Length: 318
Ligand code: NAD
Ligand code: UDP
Ligand code: UDP
Image (cartoon, helix red, strand yellow):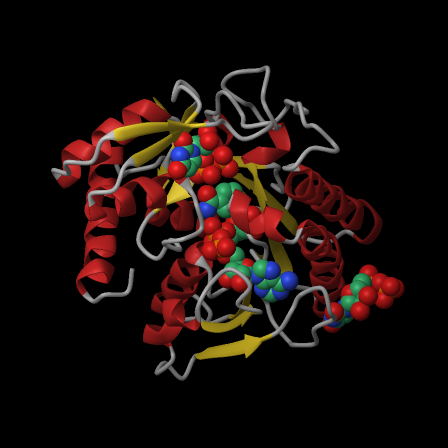
């Protein structure tokens, strides 16, 4: 028999946040979703609005927030390079002031708090695959630094609040995750390639396409978040969360062309600065501590994501 909790999800109308809110409601909890709609639309959580246990608040986490909750998932932050680079100062404020405010809130109400950290804390990694013990290789002044260093500072804040105030923290480093409800225009590789393929437009590969990423389906990631939050109090991370299957960007493009049956051709565009050359999580810690393992193979996850974007296209929404 599990207790109904009141749970705050910041960035709750975003891609991951909207899936997390839906899952928490399905588990029987009350959910307060906080979002300033910087990189998402209310439409992502429209299907949850009729549920009396769901509350949506328009709020920017860089400002203090006073609510009474049992748990906090701090996801608020633009996540795609074009969104986080659009207003880099705001990205840093969201990472840093947002973390301070949510930690202050957690301290006042005694809530467990999960931080959505990222594989970007490893930068352009020289250790492969990346274990949690790796300190990373980050350009502190490059175009990605607003996000990378913002997230690194947030981790420092979480561990400092832990040391100083004994807060029950959970820091999880999320690797590239994809699925339905990704923003069609946020420039991330999976959404870009699928939308391009469905529209018959050229597939834009940046650089030679030999850079690698490891793609996790959203349902697997949300399961990992819930298990992490429920884990023993002294297991605080940092913990990698992702799917260790590694693919080159060219392989991803070819897969999406095949799965959509698209006639799109592949074109090359310049590689953005500081684009990591390789990325793959070492998930031994999550396996050992949570018994967690991604269940969705890339092809199966891509098929569901393609069906989602195909639906948007048919409704004239993209
Ligand atoms: P997203 O952009 O879809 O969601 C982020 C949400 O945060 C959006 O709804 C946005 O409007 C909101 N937001 C931004 N700034 C805010 C602010 N100041 N106040 C309140 N709300 C604000 O991105 P996502 O993929 O759902 O990512 C969610 C979290 O997970 C982010 O913290 C991101 O850094 C992290 N993450 C995601 C991935 C991934 O592959 N999706 C990988 C690593 C880390
Ligand atoms: N804070 C908040 N909600 C709360 C409690 C605190 O937003 O319920 C904010 C508060 O505005 C403060 C920040 O969290 O700026 C950090 O709080 P903390 O108690 O750690 O620091 P202090 O208030 O002593 O600066
Ligand atoms: N990418 C690409 N074409 C696109 C979008 C992205 O080749 O249309 C590449 C990008 O350069 C990077 C990888 O795909 O090497 C993943 O990019 P994304 O923005 O999804 O995430 P991140 O770089 O933050 O992992």
